[in-house]
Length: 182
Length: 374
Image (cartoon, rainbow over all chains, first blue to last red; front, side):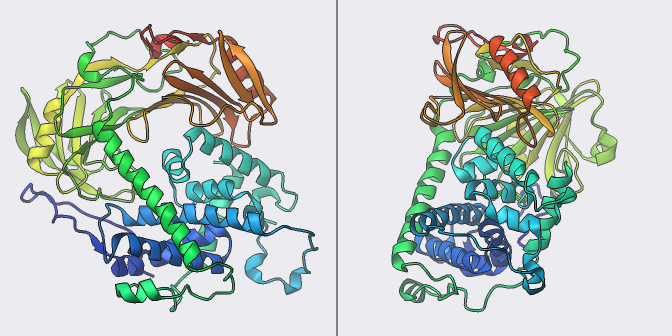
């Protein structure tokens, strides 16, 4: 898996700095960062298929907006922010369309897909979208509150409040035992 | 970090590893026609209406783009609101002795005019203060993963006495170069502060401005790391000058927590934030220039209204207080990592009782944080 990591060592041999930054081809960008962005989309949405849709939407939109070359200082951050927006919009649309009329008991554990057994993951997926987004960006993407606030379009105090509420919800979830595992 | 947060971090990393490859049929962006005409991928979740959603997302991105553009434009053109006085116009002010709870400086260092640059972000942390600056003509990408928000060409660090050992970084062996009227050094070192997670080596100008006290300018982009750019920025730094961080109010009571960080953002609007205490119990003061971002939460359940030194404030059981003052809004929060408890609420009540506005009508100057905080 290609790591979407930019690691530049700037030499001072000529005191001219590194070679000039150039815009990146969107195809190269999607190959370089696609897996990592898909991971973020997966954690944000809690659903692999939706994550693929979200990433596709974002890449298409970036292509339509910028064309072949991305004139962005940090296209990965741009795409990540767009994923956050797209996921929130998707959840909003889904909320408008879908009404839960009943809840079904969880199936016996012996028929549950192993990847679905993690109670903390299940609890995270049940959080409101903005709360889940804050936790994913803070604990997976290691984003600062300022960055999260910028991505969500809110104040940092709101980020803190969303995180507190989300963590409080997880702490009181009866399916999560000490240490966060069922 | 709590057990839950540790478990959450581990779980997210583990879950992320569920994704190891991109699906072969995920859109391949090879030519414009193919992309423009291509129908949306069919997936088990295909509940969308193709172009309508694509258009919606494009609109969202367009708005995001406009926001980004406006933000970038902001920090180049918008004069800084009066959250803190302009460093270049304030004379050095002697500060009172540090309070026992102070772990950071509550004063920025001085900056002379720096034409062609925009000041982005001040930070005061234990052991040093820093300022991120952006060259207005710099289109380069800052090194490292910055999550896309801070477009800094260079960082300035002014380090507390005895907290920087030049020999550790090989500074004495660097090229000697004058910085103002003192001898400085030009070379490369890892980004300051040192971290095993950020092994980036960047061009650096270092100089000792007082015995045992060092200042650094580090370039993060091609343009910002050029010798001339480093020296231009370094020449504007006044590391021995203290510019007080200021607040539009005084407090008679604060929780018994150390001040661990001060940050003044000059982009995405203009805000000053003081953070007290560890993550497990935080007390935060934030002053944001301009009116409140959100409508008054009068109808939100759990939000209470209270008159605070003559002004109307709103607070809730999550430990957050919002007050609109002249030209700014103030948010004060007191929370544990699992939300506010009874002690937090009681402490917040004491804080609210002890607030005295000093600039409620825009006529009085802000007061130095050193004197505003007991």
